[in-house]
Length: 339
Ligand code: AHG
Ligand code: MN
Ligand code: MN
Image 1: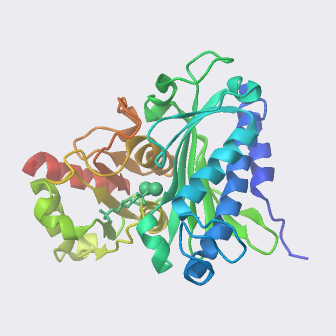
Image 2: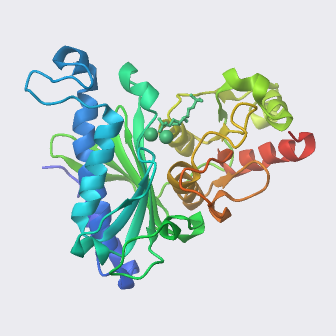
Image 3: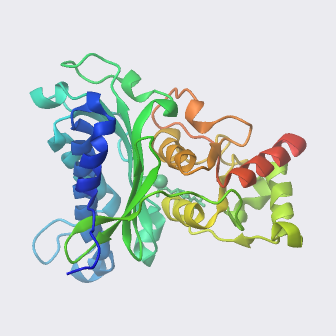
């Protein structure tokens, strides 16, 4: 028997649901369905390297099952799990051009909509590098009993009632917030439970890591170029030069910086004039988690990500997030040097 008491995801969300008396346990149910879907996707992620042995994507494998691309598979698993929760009336997903509306009787009465990036960092699947799932939960605006509408999804991030991510890495973790701090759970594979491992995640005010795809340097705004030069300069007092770390999976890059202290930047570039990352299912949920851990998430021009009013579900935005002092310094460079 372990010498300490292990708390599982379900136990913690039930404990915490007293903070949401109006939710009558609904939010807990939703989060535990996300946890269940994450475990199913995790199982498949662990087998990703076997695809070439068992059968190529879109081909039939030796069990006679059609192989799917992992991001399409993850999308289906999360949609099914959220539909089964009976309290979600619709989904906006990176994998679907339009919103997915659940119109069965139970779901029409659901109070929530979910925005989701089912598989983040998909270019890393084939090379055994960490990938993730990112989600964001809103209370619907349209009346219960009717079909969800696009307006239910086009709410600013400040209206999120929960957000989180799953990272499928050397360990699988689920990190979430309901606005009462950022909490992390690690999957114990032998018992198949997410166990509380990071009760109150607080990101350092300043860090030593900067994360950006520097291959795009030539296309960066002048402010970003100058900030990068600052990161690379020698200065003992501020522990510079900083370290450069970039995985290419937002979830993994953010998770490392959250724990160690650092800044993640995906600016707008000449080729992506609105940035690359998506406001609804990448930046808003990460911003909520960052702020709840004491960090910041802005667009590089002094605007708080969570206050941006979305106008379309796949909208992109430039993104500066991480340790508070680092985001402030980077934005000061942006202000001084401009685009
Ligand atoms: P997705 O796999 O969901 O399309 O997201 C990829 C995103 C994000 O995870 C990552 O930080 C970024 O794209 C990497 O982009 P670059 O390859 O342009 O650096
Ligand atoms: Mn993504
Ligand atoms: Mn994706």
